[in-house]
Image (cartoon, rainbow, N blue to C red; front, side):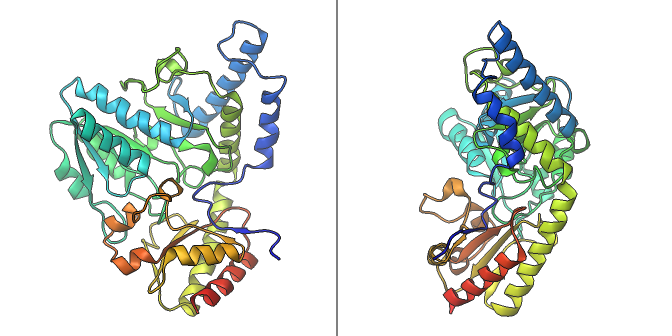
Length: 379
């Protein structure tokens, strides 16, 4: 009997680190105050939240007033796309540009604005390796373009987009640029000044924080309309009582992941190379999706031609191995991955695509067992 499942779905979510758990426990008991309350408990909670905000500010190289806490990456992406687009529409700019491989929270936000509020949306094609074409981006820009949003690291194939170059193109045209950096945070260095970006989304549960915590970096001077109206919290950009434990945990998790970022990247690279080498030698009909030379190492996407991904994932799970076929946010939908479709995969490749994503607790022994079971299943 299997006592413990092998977890190879870190791109979906990560386990909360023990250090983070210890850091947030006091905020469920004696440090339980509302940050807006005018007394000791409120002052204490507000002081601690602001300390964590300063910590994130330093790690991102941001300035005061530029970190807005949210309930996660989806809310932050909604705030970025809808908030900026609506503010820009007042200036006569009703055109949005996104890539064809964005997370569903970006695609659906842009789609909503297109269908319900009259915005025009351009969805950029990608190469067969899942990278946007910068010339296509230049050609898509019009005088009405108000915001461009391109994800930093794709959550299904791990491809790194040319964010800095794309941002420079936007700046030349005085267009606001946003990146969904949810999969990049904790792996790649995020320096908002070096990148030159106007808005960045991060989410705690992707770097060993707790679920329900996210943040949106908003460069000072950028105007956006709130999508959650209420109190004056978060510089009047996001109403609602702050989730203090989540905020404390997110900042703690980001600091922890940032401190071991280089060692973590090296370990993920070793795991990736080992896994790829074994698959290439032992499963010849497996096709790697994406660009092996331009990706983060912890995400691998394979098509096992002639098989069905749902069957593979089910049998892997029955044998104690957890992985997925695409983003967890679209698992219940009866459709292919928009990322793989945008890359031009054929139906057999789409039907058989499986994502393996590694994390800091994985071992080579776990990968050995995974290859063994995978070969047995495909046999």
